[in-house]
Image (cartoon, rainbow, N blue to C red):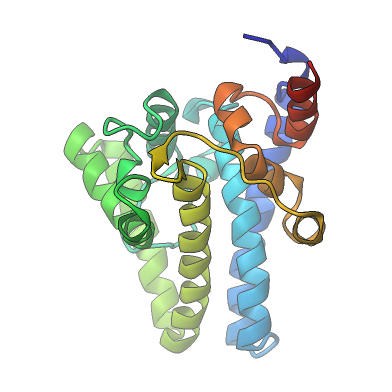
Length: 252
């Protein structure tokens, strides 16, 4: 297999992703505060949160391939975005993702419930991803002390924000959750299913879609989606270099 080690993400990339994770997290919460106080209306809040969550998700994903939980600070491992009352943290999602790379799009894939079985089943899996992943992970691995403590912290944040303003929290939470569902469906089912076959596939985008998407969501989101097949073959390559690798593969 051709190697592309020169394109691998490095420590600087890992630090950048971790910094982005903190910035996006704080800004997502700031949007809730601005919405509660009337500085943002529901429409603008939902748009901004949707963009931030998408960027947050790719930073979280890219870190999986660069940092073990012990190499991150506690806040990064905790993962405090309240997508669900009960949810997993960095350690658990990283373990799941490593299993996904090992058993991609097979029945042994821990993400099979939102990949396999057709588009409707995969969509339902995306809608219930947080709940199903939490139940499935604890059933398979048990409930560690760390996970239990982090789940209590995340639940406390969820309830506290709900009590601050139930209506504002509902609208803000729906923006979080709907964005996650759409991104999950694309990043798992659409890139691993093609014409009745399971595997890992690219998603070519025409320029009139790719260029605006790059401006709004950034290179990591767009390139990791468009060149997902290469990501699975060379998981440590930084997303920003995936088009270069694709060009080399197609010309070499």
